[in-house]
Image (cartoon, rainbow, N blue to C red):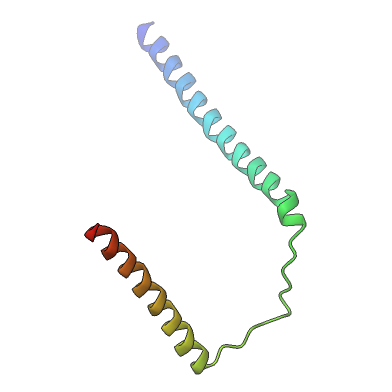
Length: 83
């Protein structure tokens, strides 16, 4: 009798775990559907037909600008350390 009760409890636990997994999957599906219907995704203003072509010269210029900004930031950080 005790073994039978333990077996039944085991099945109940397995069922509860399975139900929890199913409910989690359903919740994930509902959340993904809610994200798809949000106003932000519905009002996407990007235009995928317009592309910006970047040449090698553009890459060099962008890299120089980034390095200049990083140098300014590091100079400010050193100035703060000195104070």
